[in-house]
Length: 273
Length: 118
Length: 133
Image (tube, rainbow over all chains, first blue to last red; front, side, top):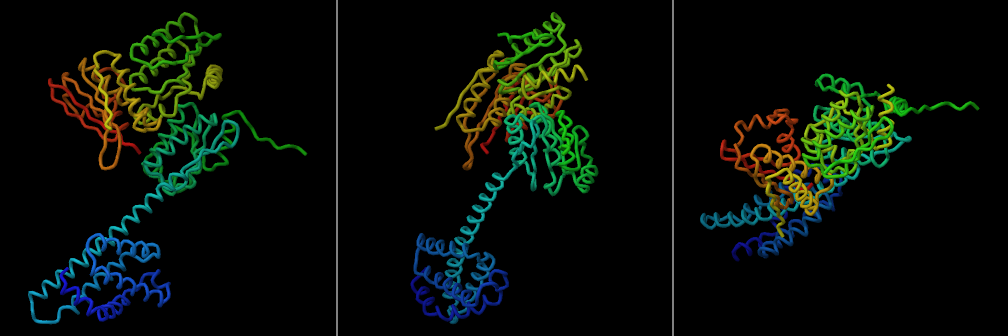
């Protein structure tokens, strides 16, 4: 950025800031931004704009560092990216309007381009930083999901239950299958009840995974009972033409356990007092 | 290489402990059938605990052993199929349908008893 | 360091040698027991196809890397009769050898990437990759 523009920007700093503050106030509609106090809101806006002016005098890596540091704070505070980007758009408008006031057209165009480049660079760094933090969040959530995926719980001698909760995708289905089979071996389960009460949707894909899991269970030498089939799940299964005829199903975990006890020649009896 | 086949009353017990190559697998098939014929066995337990891979060929041989033994009047139970092996078979689309299975030798013998009585 | 290994298939023992080499490499790369079994089984299928249809050929196994991912790559080559109808051999249950017809479609399902190049009377090359999860 050439010296002339830098100086000019600094001269107009307060007008640009005031104009900009007025403009951004117009789209402070996000819930989060509504919830914070006016003072905090205005202070943060002012800090943001100061940070922008700081980058005017900086080059390359320094610019990046200044913005990165500040962006981390914004992300932590929960300022939405769309607000920041609109803010940057407004900032460009305001800056251009206050800088271009004379009749020298070539100089105006040069100014315009300089401001444009400057704003674009800032936006790129901001977006890069925000999306990096989202990817990180998604990664952490994936890990968390993996950790909570499907334990096999032994309930009686040779009978175990695996409650499935949440959506089952291919990745998770593989994980579930591995847990299921190693659990069967570990607990020497003869019957495994797969409880799908907590599975919101059973489509052909999910059914396919469940069928595969139960076939694998059969290969290692145990039996599967599918339990927790709610009316709407039964309807979708039949409507989709999924054939679950080959392995036993029960409406509830209770019924499943009763038939599992039967299969392992056990019985629950009442004790007479 | 030959896989040893043990006789226990009416049953044959086989524990496969080697990495099965095709020739050994086919030899095994023949040996089991001969032994069933010789001993008049009613049941066979094939334990696969130490087998860490079953491909389509070996799966076919095992499935055939089961069918052939059934023809000769002996029930076969496969035991100890490892989780990794089971998952691989399922991935390949090999389900070994109609083949009785059990967790281990002990439960395999129980299973045979059930099959033969029921 | 790039790890790789090469096995010539000209007898049934080659099949066993190839899958043992594959399991060793898969373990070194860091695959879990289930994926080790998948890779070993895929190699067994490919090696058997070479032996059955082309009599001899090679199995080449190496570590694969791509945009931060690591995995294992298996290349099976032979100069046999080639596959006349590639689409057909990928159908479940299609067999010319009296097997289960699960071989090639099975390999495709066991692995993450799968490619067949085949020219009638020239030979066949099958390249397949499994990525670390």
